[in-house]
Amino acid sequence: MRWKRDCCGTGRNLPSTGPGLTDTTTAPADPTDDAPIDAASTPVVTEPVRTTFAELGLSEPVLHAVADMGYRHPTPIQEQAIPFVLMGRDVMGTAQTGTGKTAGFTLPLLDILSGSRARARMPRSLILEPTRELALQVAENFVQYGKYLKLTHALIIGGDSMTDQRDVLNRGVDVLIATPGRLIDMFERGTILLSDAKILVIDEADRMLDMGFIPDVERIVGLLPRQRQTLFFSATMGPEIRKLGDAFLRNPKEIAVSRPASVAATIIEGLALVAEHDKRESLRRLVRTQHVQNALIFCNRKRDVDILHKSLSRHRFSVGALHGDMAQTVRFATLEKFKVGELQLLVCSDVAARGLDIGGLSHVFNFDVPHHAEDYVHRIGRTGRAGLEGHAFTIASPEDRYAVEAIEKLVGHAIPPINVEGLDPVAWAEEDGRKRRRVRGKGREKEQQRAAEPKKKDKATKDKPERTRRRERVETEATAVLAPTPVAGLGREADPARGEGARREGARGESARRAPQSRRPPSPIPGPHRGPGPQGEGEQHLTHRGPPRREPNHPDDHGPPVRGFGDDVPAFMLLRPRPRPTATTEHQESEA
Image 1 (cartoon, one colour):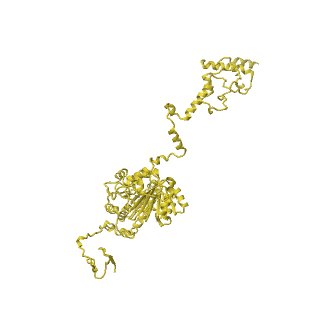
Image 2 (tube, rainbow, N blue to C red):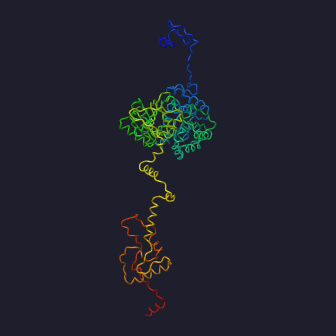
Image 3 (tube, helix red, strand yellow):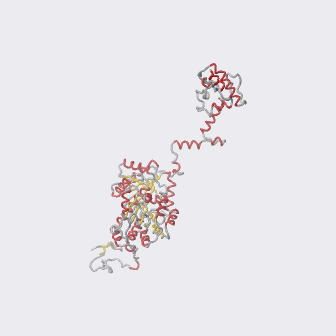
């Protein structure tokens, strides 16, 4: 006989079943000295009647598969979305991560497609996912929920053999699960036709927007028939997401089971404020003291994922890494090890872990405060799923003040602070450190020096860079060196007022007079250029076509460099041309 506890607080056990006890009778009470209790004075607490999957209109094969998974009652998003999907209505659903949105469109989709068969290269339905891991997860749900139905599916994602994917499409598929990039690639190769896809599912629409897939999604929607059913699901519903929904859907049924960007009540949050150089140590201490069964550790950058993974491995933690630059086979193998319990910790990026459904995940650690406040909701939504309790801890540095405030404003409550034992407490910084981090090393010192320099009155001089000012000083010195000087051999001073033609003739005459004295060019005489050509400004122009290439105040300064032949002209340039023979001369030579 089974016994139940006395509700009156007497400490006695009362029989709940036994001979002669039916559903309408009660067990006789044991004799007691207590005063009788009036039944009308004690309120009767009754549990609310919960809806079951059988009441949603699903077929028997689907209900049988759901029962095998251990589910009996749908979640709020499933309870509201499944009937409208079965009616053929467009649906725009918004719910927290971990509330069962995937089953909200998977179960009715199986019922709708069970009545006919697909043709080659023409899928009957299309599900778009932002990441390969999420597409693989949806494919696993179709296998589990559709095991009693004769439906086929294909997974079109990057990293897999395109030949194998083409062979599956040629046999005909009922459900096509794909990422936008690979789907467009297959369409351009003529491998797939989307004219027969009557149902479109856009999952994780907010992540599609963040990753820049919206242009690809718009192109894919243009390839589908106009008469179709569209299901639009997202964890957050911002203005951009709603605008996309209005463009893709027709008279949709809007379902919102929770406030946008809210945190599930089953998640216990915490915020640890530590110094920047203590973040790794604080993470290790939290993992050791929080009784972590398994945990996801999020970083903002893929490089930080690798660095933190190596650090935890050196401290002998069972840890793996997951980010977008890893090979597809390595990512799947690492994720499978984490799911089966071979790895305790998994360091990952936002894109790689978006939408992952890992049963019984106990903890989520934000090693870096996310850049976007919406990512905080998606990160911690990996834990506390299916009504289970989860823990989410964020490790922040003093410079993350404004990022934390943006998160608290989005979720509508403050994150409770926690203390990490053994680490010095710190306070929030006054400025936004994320902008200041861009200036590092020498760049920071130069910026401080420029800020400390007094402002100059001459605005023109202030705007000129240092290189320009140094070049102007060199040009000034060169002009002083190249001032007009007496020309040797001419017995007169250079006259800048003389015409260019007269100066050229004088130079040629002087060269002609010197030619008989020497037939070979002597060694050049160091000094200013006194060769043929104009003097004064013209001489300076021909000698130097710009400032001399030398450093100012050079110790071995011999003046400007010499161009041309200097004062001496080679002999071959002084040879006189032979006179042309005339007709008379030719006649005399012929007679001779």
